Image (cartoon, rainbow, N blue to C red; front, top):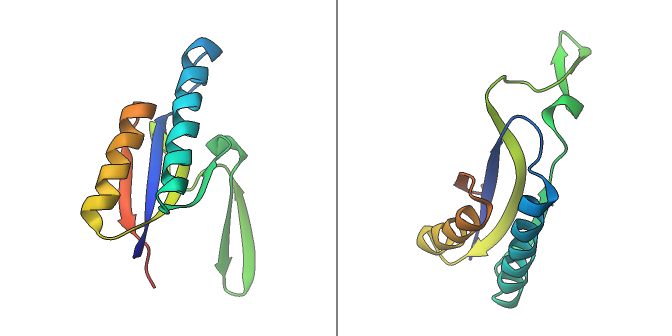
Length: 113
């Protein structure tokens, strides 16, 4: 079994209202339960907005801190799930279901090591 990172990208801006977001979160919880039952789920987390980020760099022995996201864009990493899957096709299957529930793009990457 290999591990895969399923990165969920969401548009910048306000969250959807509860009447839109609550049903999505309920379906997401059910999918996470299904992944757990299948032995695929390793870890998942949502992230606070990019405005809460701090970028840390090391330059010439000094640590430099910058508020905000490293890259500017119209979407950002909103959350992620780490899964174990037999192969890329299985990981893509879980990612497809995740994308259908969230209505957001999901990037799939194998975890090194």
